Image 1: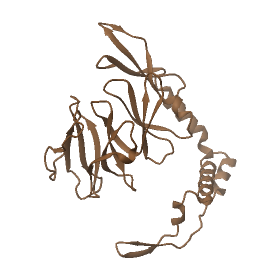
Image 2 (image 1 turned 90 degrees about the horizontal axis):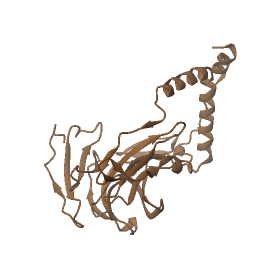
Image 3 (image 1 turned 60 degrees about the horizontal axis):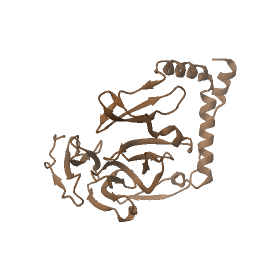
Image 4 (image 1 turned 45 degrees about the vertical axis):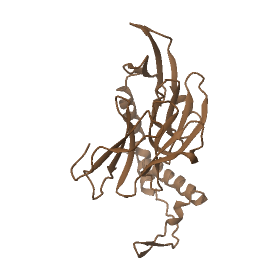
Length: 288
């Protein structure tokens, strides 16, 4: 560490946010929360505090910048570029991704199977780099093609809130459908290619509900399939390998008293109004 960098570390001082009295009542107990005002993102003091924290971090860590660059280049040097996945056949298409040199994200491709060792032209079915260029922050959680391979549904977070929005894009035209499902978690396509089964998050970002969305309709009209009332559980949606059923997993949250207990129910992925069937009642130590 040089004398200049040592001086920077010694003189760096963390910002001190103002304290404002705010009474909280939880379980009948009152307590003061002097930093409650930080929850208001529209308060300009919040953004200013974050900027000051970043400046403090940069100043405190300035002497490690050469090491940071060395480590970054070492890590990056161990990543194969360009990289490409092994193709996976789904029906009459093969799907794969390719990560080009210098790109932030992989691009997903597909080719139609025409016969034995015969394939159609390569087609981009999802370009995350193009989508990310429109946002300061962008993270895709899941991508799934519709059963007829004409549409791609994907869930993404464009602001860092960890609350995803599900979008549906026409693969051939690259046009977005008007359907946008806010505050979403996991999802799966129904086999008719016109419905999406998905979870929604509560105020604590826990998936508490499973709903059914019909393409071309508003999210407000989505039908509720299951709601979780126990705060120690969350819900997730997936599809069986046979694609015959959609699985709804009721899983315990980390640290809850029900740890080690899960339940799985299912609905038909083909019926428009399927009955919810439970495989088995949850019991301590039972984990699917």
